[in-house]
Amino acid sequence: MSDHHTYKKIEIVGSSKQSIDDAIRNAIKQANKTTRNLEWFEVTETRGHIVDGDVAHFQVSLKIGFRIENS
Image 1 (tube, rainbow, N blue to C red):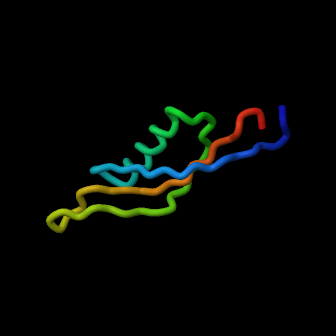
Image 2: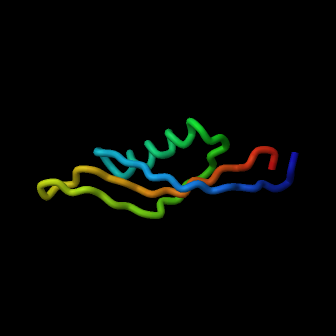
């Protein structure tokens, strides 16, 4: 067992028609399918799409940190 951890960050973009929160959760769920040891996230950018004066789509850029195995 190590007394320290080493992490790596990836950057992904999540989207949703419902909310920013849903876009974040969608991104994390998808990342979790192919990346192990996810530990934290940071929203770096938020944007959306407007149709007929209303929000039609939310999009968020995330940095996700995961612990490198055996570190």
